[in-house]
Image (cartoon, rainbow, N blue to C red; front, side):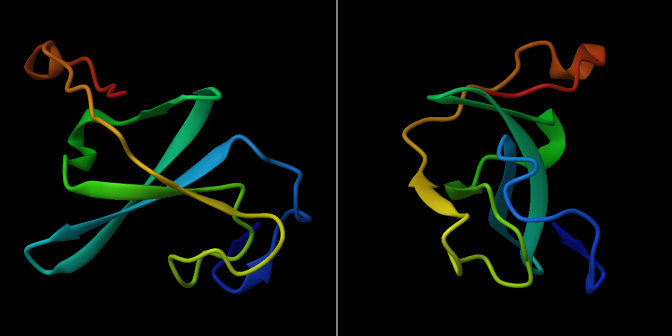
Length: 93
């Protein structure tokens, strides 16, 4: 994992971390998530709903693309919004 240009963890140390890119009004925003099952990703409810794909197991996230043998790009089939989001529960599948 590379943060701010500095390697803070070797490749494959955190294979459950997920990177999400979303087109927003200003261009693109990014959210993190975690793989909780081979078919389920958990993220924050405020991250939005315009996701098309996620990047699993990425190491250097300077570009939203699979750039090495650590990463896998997965298209999103559906997004399940959190009906309790306004009640302060900040999760989304």
